[in-house]
Image 1: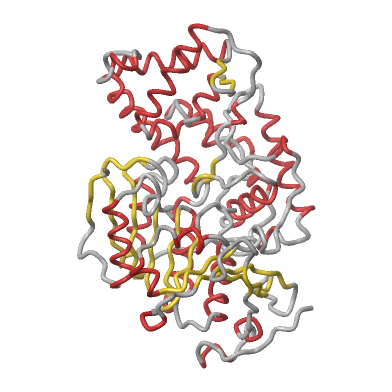
Image 2 (image 1 turned 30 degrees about the vertical axis):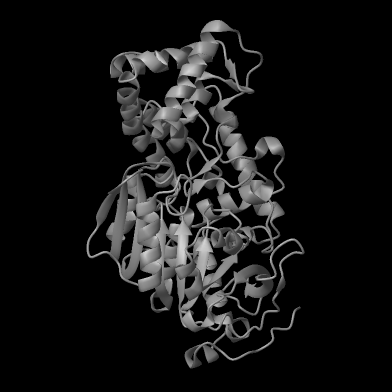
Length: 486
């Protein structure tokens, strides 16, 4: 067992209690790797696997930092989480150094970490074979539903057996507790934070559990805490329908270019005829073989109208002119998570994704028949993606949750940034978080497409400016605002 070396506590109030040994660690900072800048430092600290038993099993957290080059202007630390669940964050200080304005970098040490179970932070595994991996929802079909149920149960069983007892402790609440240990170990009374996608929910949970420890909070592309986590999958289906309608209107106005129809109704018919055609004879395009179900699975494409129009046009041309070679199921669709785009598709990523998604809340139905009935219902409501969103997941068979989900509702000041046409955390999700964080202000990028806004290509200057201004001055906008996408 590692010896936890004491150092001066961040506050006297933290000098007593069962977490003393963790909060008083003195990390040994070293250059992260020979090819990285010397200013990019990494260290390992210990946290309890189970915060209810701080004297029990310990796990490691990998933490990184780039200290400000202007100590006289330093305000504190700026912690990052890039999303997931399951995304590694250790390199984010290095990545953000390229994008953040100098005025922000002068005020903060940039701090990253791999959340518990991820990457270099005592990674967990479920021992999943390649064909068992991937969190993309599966289309509901009566003839394949029993296989979907078997896959869901197999994933849950393997995660329970193969994780060494760690899997139930990989939750958002425990990651928030880890963040507070990191804060204390760094000697800070509070932290500023930038969270993207799933990281917005992590930031909201931290603000609920440790409200006095929050300085400046930026939440970009937000998760609605009332929808974790099945509801965040289902909102993809409900949000995809207006996005699809918008796409049909945009494409019809450019009938001469895309030749999919001169009215929205004609464009819609072209698409559904293509789906029917591809289900009969799959279409091969750019090395991918598309069934009709796999075409439907790309519902996120329709939030970016031009890209979707080009893709559907090319599929139609290919389908009309040449036969396809081979086929694959829609299970090869874009791997996605309720908190945002997946970051890789190895077993560690899947293990953490399911651990958080299933372990954060007890609201997942346990009866497979409920998933079947919901999938049938939602395919009628939301033809593009409804059956995908409501079909069965491993959470139906997950071990019992160790604690209830976090009820979010506080007056923490926060800046919420949201694209109008975000496929992963739709606008409705962002407004849901905004309602619960009563001290927040929301900046909506009208016409903004894609997931994650600030300091992300293609750049959105109005969002970058708003985030930079808040982080440097601490002043939120006086009211919710809207700016136009470039």
